[in-house]
Length: 290
Image (cartoon, rainbow, N blue to C red; front, side, top):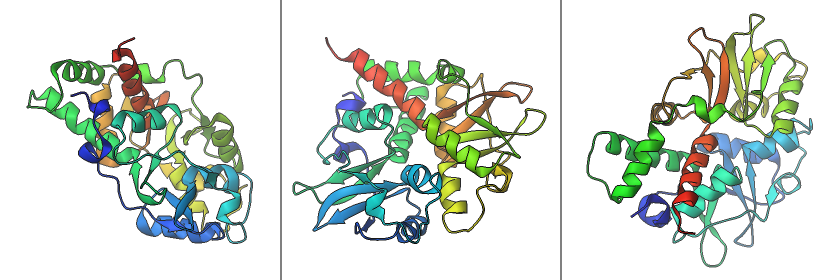
């Protein structure tokens, strides 16, 4: 049976979600997300899901707008009426939301619209990495031969192909202000920017997770250089790596974004989990009968 046609409840394991009321402050929501090591919280009113607040919401609507997390209510910056799935929906439905609409967290609700968990992109990536390892080692799989062959072909693609057609990678210099990096991430609708030094070598990466961890609870000026809040010396993927190798690296390190570099260490682009899921979603749509 193809991966995409299987039910979420039979293949993946949504994690318990955390919830806040619409009137909760952003600082309360962020503290809860940090404590539980989650990138989102469900916003619930009268037992029904009315919104979701994510790291990207914090980036775009709080940090980039220079709002105070203490005085800003979640209801004013959350994503209202989020798309949600039931545990009986297909894995393909979840991949479509993640790949085509950029969701990293898909709420799982019951029949009454109450949240019962959240399916994270991490769980999908973990399963894909597991299946690619099985395919590469010729172990038995629950997938049919056509799906196994498609997964194997996907895994052998050069990771460089994921960066093609995406335009100029989002990048800033280490001395650029945090404000400029936040604006670039918001305007380019990306979850990370690569940070370069004066020699144009990769020296860091600044991600949505860095925004939450290093800015949410601090009074740091947005005019401070991005080098003070970036993740320094990130792992780089060589442009010659395969998608399978990239997926394994991202899963093992819990990375959502990784820069690409050529043999000289120069910037070769940046790929995200969404790029890989996009390949899976494209393969799925091509395999469907017309």
